[in-house]
Amino acid sequence: MSAPYKILAITGSLRKASFNTALLNTLAATDYDGLKVEVADISEIPLYNQDIDVEPVLPAIQTLRDQVAAADALIIASPEYNYTMSGVIKNIIDWLSRPYGKAAVVGKPILIITTSPGSTGGVRAQSPIRSTLAAIGAYPLGGAEVIIAAVDKKITDGRFTDEANLTFIAESLERLKAEIRVRQAA
Ligand SMILES: Cc1cc2nc3c(=O)[nH]c(=O)nc-3n(C[C@H](O)[C@H](O)[C@H](O)COP(=O)(O)O)c2cc1C
Image 1 (cartoon, rainbow, N blue to C red):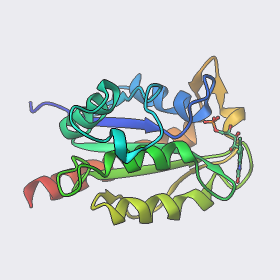
Image 2: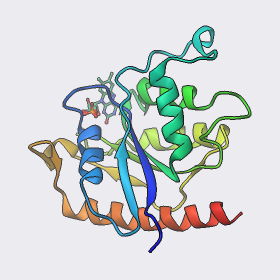
Image 3: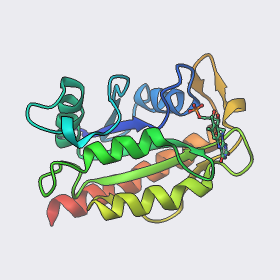
Image 4: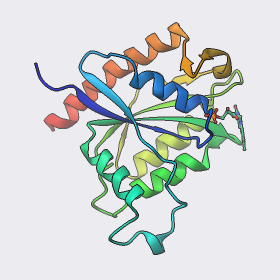
């Protein structure tokens, strides 16, 4: 049996009790066929500043870039802030977009998840994340978007519990696996 695909999950929230992080931790604790989800620690990632984006970069940046390089694909789970992606996830994407021409994120398939306590599930953050990822040469997964409404009602003791959403995410991860196979065969 071949090794499971490595999926690095990145949250768009620094909040300790973040719903997005709780969702990603739940995926990391779930047994999936042929893939394993690991959640990146972004707590020490500073605001992007080109002055400090020089070798050697801060350990937290190097670790994140190395984790992306070692991953077969990524998951981004982000809240919507003021009708767009959170600054947290934009900052992470900016760090991952460099070094220019050598960024590890280039060519990686990425599943985008947005959430909200509201009824719209952060949908207005989907397109901005998608277009930013496309701009840096990553491959945001096409097809039906993973949009999670009323996320605050779906977390119990730090675990995401909505079965319908989890089934849809599992189906999306199957599509992510198919995309990994296409990209790695290319
Ligand atoms: C600055 C700010 C802006 C927000 N803007 C939106 C918004 O545009 N749409 C929305 O559905 N929720 C919005 N929210 C609510 C967030 O979805 C909510 O705080 C959510 O819990 C944040 O995700 P987290 O739990 O992962 O930290 C906003 C929250 C903050 C703090």
